[in-house]
Length: 115
Length: 110
Image (cartoon, each protein chain N blue to C red):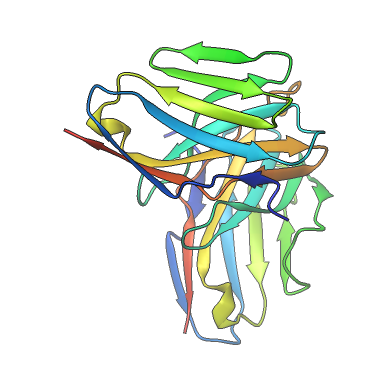
């Protein structure tokens, strides 16, 4: 399977715990994106990387959210001190980032439930 | 800031008929638009796109129309098939910001 891979698919945690999600992009893609999606809404952009550089992070929801892409390959999204409002689907996407087309290919997402 | 809007949460169409999904945007800096389709338990899948230098792009049964003056785009599916039943999102980006609409759930009735 050469698509975008996200792990875990489901995560249940207690309020106040830290969680980390992993995203493996399509191998030749140099751009990687994180989104959050809640019920009845579209994907909400959080942050993105070009190679290992995080080019945009102003839309991260709070300072409890952070993302890394240390070697320009896989990425992790961490949420510290989780709150019930963090319960959502977290989507990762990757793209070639060539020219203006910027077609993003999405993984199946990680569903987070905060109890 | 809902810069991309899909005002119809749902749409039902008979198999074989045309489905028209609409999207409005507010940011005049958007110059490339995409439509994604999403099935339950899967991530969104790219469907078709259009550049602002065009007013129409066609790919098989799918055609996207762009009206820049009205800041409106639409996706036409003809003929509609039961397998087209999914949630459809329009999306755009400017600079380092990316925006998706809230989606329209299409049901194609056999």
